[in-house]
Length: 212
Image (cartoon, rainbow, N blue to C red; front, top):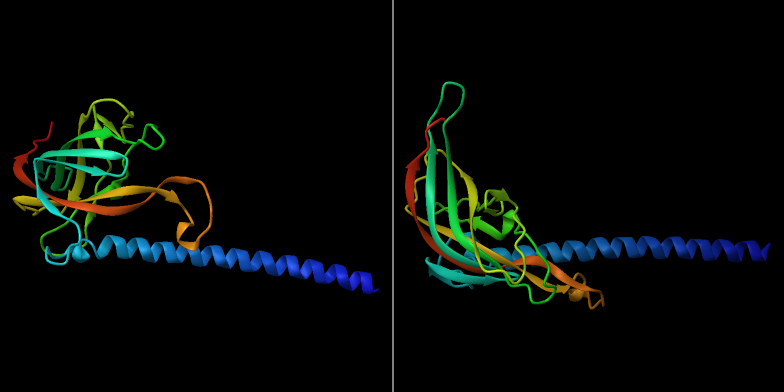
């Protein structure tokens, strides 16, 4: 009988250890989310004011290194599509840049996520994420390490009456690090955790797109 009790104790201890490990992982993830939010909101002054930003604000044309990508910002367009017989009026912003893969860590091909380029509205409303990058008419184009910069653009869906003449684009870059580095764990490193790098002011022109 004592042997059975000893086995039960071992099983209980194993279950408790797994529960603790599972909750510890959740707390680590929650901590990482809080840190990332702080890193995003604080450097950009809450995405609201120039005065509170801990990252530089620069004017296009300019080149920004952000993690494993280099962005050469050039221009932007506000494209209006009038209301049609069967469609509502729409407005979108397209920001143009030359994209180059500068990943010296892994030298692998990669595409940018929508959160890496964010339009910061002048009225202080929430930033608008892009749709990624379109290059050579291909959305989510995978830039190859070692090749020259290629012309691309990012699209932002904006309110119909959007008319800012100079856009502010928040640029975020990934960091090559371990997932649990904050907790002191030793794991493999990889690109993750986008952090603010810069805000780029890009002048915009307005165009009207007619139905085909």
